Length: 89
Image (cartoon, rainbow, N blue to C red):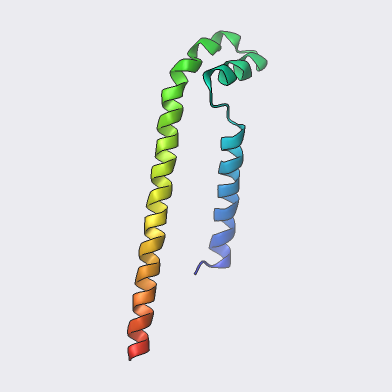
């Protein structure tokens, strides 16, 4: 089980990451529009080059989520096996 002190920061960081992912433009035209709105219209030519970087960051985030899921699964398995051994004694 998660402690109360460890659970709240994880929830806040997850909510922040979800909010940031929702607000970040994902298509090259949206990136160009955002850069133009911020006064960086000349930098909009770089928007198509940013797509592979965004895909790499998305893949890294998915890999991190998978690692976290596996660690939680292993921790649950260790906890349940320890509980069953203690119950036998």
